[in-house]
Image (spheres, protein in one colour):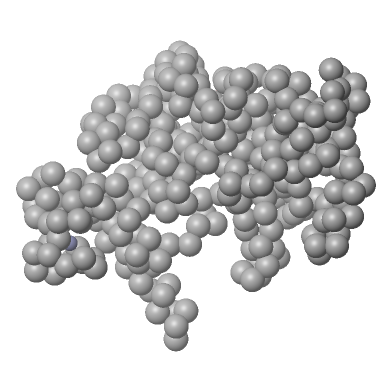
Length: 311
Ligand code: GDP
Ligand code: ZN
């Protein structure tokens, strides 16, 4: 089986000099070929720069072990400032292509402004527009889910108690490398456990994660299906790493972006400008007032951030 061509796998974890590589339901503990390490060192990067999410070519040595021969080009990177220095970025995962924003139907009760903030950050990162209301056994979220569906988001309703919506969630994650985002206590770990019991995320432990841990702990991919992974980033709320500037905010609300194409001015910020199609849509009830309020709040924050930077 260890033909000369090797296999293509995806790195799920980097630990103690080993790279754990997933291929067809199996995880191989791999080392990187010496040549690869040297080239990395010459390029001024550490070998540990192979990160979870990287796709690699590797030669299996047994059913548990292998050697990475080659890393494949990254489509995208998820980074954070190293030691708080915005000029030095640490890549924590590669090829993440979707966010799933999770809120609870209740306990904690969903707050529209918090939902909008998470969705805007996801959109600004190019991670799509998937929203999941969990704990649907506790309350009816129809009004909220209709609001977001009408705005253009894909809305799922789940319950890890009854199993409602878990198949739909599985389908939504299939073929993607997804970050699960949302406030604590909404059931993110429970959802991952429900999809992949072997992923052994600790329910109720998230609030404690990251504390006392070394800040350079990298992400880990948890397989949640045949071709689906969620990214577990200890102590890092991935979407908080996103920077919002005013132009990004203008594009980060799906329905506001769409209606905004009809404003009189191309650079309309949808406040008091004449001929603003967004304000008209809000007045006519086609855009929800809560969404518009969230937009104005995020826009003001982004403008304030910009003023501080250029001062
Ligand atoms: P996280 O902080 O978002 O990862 O949330 P957890 O997965 O730790 O769950 C927080 C609490 O909500 C735990 O007590 C879970 O048992 C509970 N929980 C998770 N999913 C559901 C659900 O679908 N329905 C109900 N009623 N409780 C849930
Ligand atoms: Zn406008």
